[in-house]
Image (cartoon, rainbow over all chains, first blue to last red):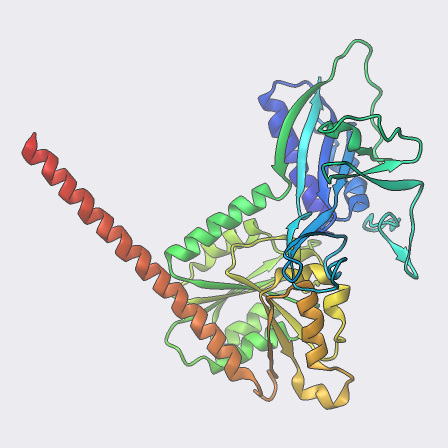
Length: 113
Length: 316
């Protein structure tokens, strides 16, 4: 399951930022997960506690914001909403789509004290 | 929720109906969407206040806040895959410096990746060598098969891991030390889900789908087909025994990746193999040509700097 690898990566990022800011501990980690990204939010939640144990973020709150997907529809000539990879343009039904938003998986901010 | 891997019902559907637990979507005027639990005030957060768009995990067990401690928010804005991507970029740079054409072969287990490799090595007429990095949970059976066919190979065993990542490939590249101008084939762990997320530094992801797997795989596993530039349809010698329409498979693949190309072939009979070998040969030539262009450009730059230096010395 690759969410473990992603959670470990999250731990490295969080610890590095916390140390640079001379934090004693991290109380919250905020994450943005795009609707079109390769991560299952609940799997990431599952891994979070276990992965943060022993780090400055042990016991931290995990908060997830899911951002929806968007794609450029070539026939429509504009950006449209895209809920999932493989779905058609909601306006014209074409699959000639180029994803423009919603694949991000990022740590946006942390709360330290 | 699956207690083995944690994947859960949050985004799961049963017979088309989403399983939710009191949630709804709300769209801001600027087009951004937030997901709220019922009971949150819709006007309770200002535009640009992202903090209130976050849903706290019900699975984490946070410590209570101490009295008197004021939390301090630090902006991070770093991609989860930043480290992997940085290492992958390093791999890509190192490969480009040696004019190597590298491919990341992905598929379900049993689609015929290793057989494709063996047949490719046996059928390769170009003078440039084929180098291989193999990925499996355990054993070196695939690397052994590839070596027996005549190519150099390094085996990565991921243990419990379900995908190759850029660091594994970086280590393998150091051990393998692939020849300049070679064709590097990286056979990923058989898995149609996880490897999609991980850049290894390759030029292309090539997804292999066999005719025994069902033509709707691209719809059922969209992330992988979305990430690939080429679809190799394998085991076409079995087409008369299965209900599989290659044109439908390509149509489905193009729904998730409009730019994807398809090469149908059989590693057993060799049918369709020429198109695959030509595609590989073209990639190898382009990688070498790009390296030559880079070298030529660098040499021009060196000459220009030498002229400049000579000019400064004489005028000093």
